[in-house]
Length: 536
Image (cartoon, rainbow, N blue to C red; front, side, top):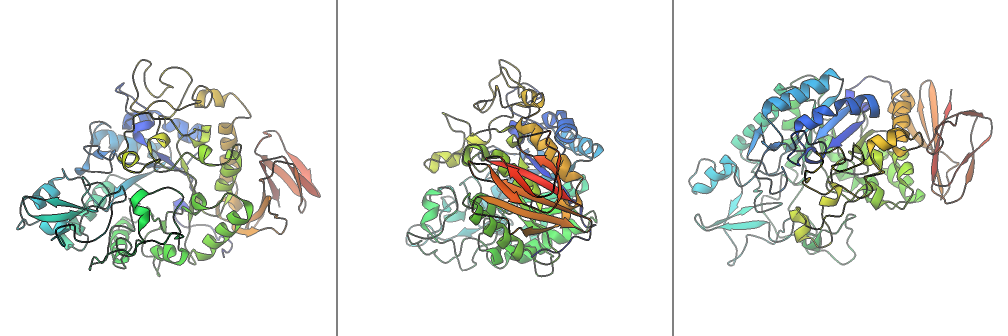
């Protein structure tokens, strides 16, 4: 499954990555929208208070903001809402000065329909850039096939002036680029070079498996009633088996080309692809047989798993079994597209989830605000197109402003300024300032756990092995390096549970900051709590 680590290797194997949604992190200029200078102002918090190693920044590029930055009109320019290109360069420099790596979002599948490339492509069938996007004749007076957009409705929009349809995996304002066109591919790889030249340390590759589709554009088959679906309602998109509108085998060559450009910079930059695939061998294929594709596909399996010990154990063991020899994985429990972890899980399980996330074999990816227990926000008037088109699901609630302090504006923006999304519920108590002075707070638990992980080779690089002491209510596993073993005990029960372990010392308790004791036999875990024991 996973052998002992020999150490060395790229920086991201040891790192904890923290996702920042810049619109909601910190507003530095009083307009109600977070910006790059706001991120800069909180870098000391990230490294000195929290203790993370890298930030992933959601898009801050020039955009009409129809999909809040994932619809780009200039990949090499910063949208004025966030600041300037000089601000982005300063953010990279200031992060590096503090030892923080910077990962940016690389939107690989599409642009905005206002991008100069698309305006040229749309201008005429004879445009030199016509083939930079996907244009097709219709079928029987309608779209070319039955593909639907992720956001609902046909994945094709008719363009009257040129009498053809263009394809869009997402909004009509996000036309798909054509990676089968060599000139388009080179232009998109030039975007990577632009940001690598400015010192970024990695790319989060958006829609990484959706960028290449069946060249014959065959109809997708309808999904049977009992067909497996992810953990959220996708509306009309769920009505089909997505056999032909994503993950065409040609996608692997495209990722090899991308990785080749990144590798040419010789600094172990990370490429982590958004891969919503739950067939594990297919998911693992994005590493490449020679590990020459993505550094790693994003691992959403914890979020898709039922939240009980037997299922979680099976999921984790299956993922690790399918990671190719010599490769590495990651784990995450939240992001800008999903309901907040604290609202998605059963009440009282946030500490268990954090401990699991930060002690598995792989790179943890945290979502801003989870460290203070941010819950799903209530947004009366959605700014999320997905929320409008998919009944019952809006991403706005997971994107509410970061609460830095109690009071008006929550430290995100100036008092009296209306933030772009309302401050989330419980911000008066679930905020950085309040939790920092409470020794037993969730934030201080994260800090203790991150510090423990940073100082432990076993937790950062060690092997993973489920312990025979595991039950249907208590998950026990070991992390082992050459000179150290850590045993993690997670009690999912509402009752105290006792587990027999080999002699060691308790070095972490989710609910008791001062717990530090030698054990020579059974160790007790309180209800819904976690304990870590060190064995030398």
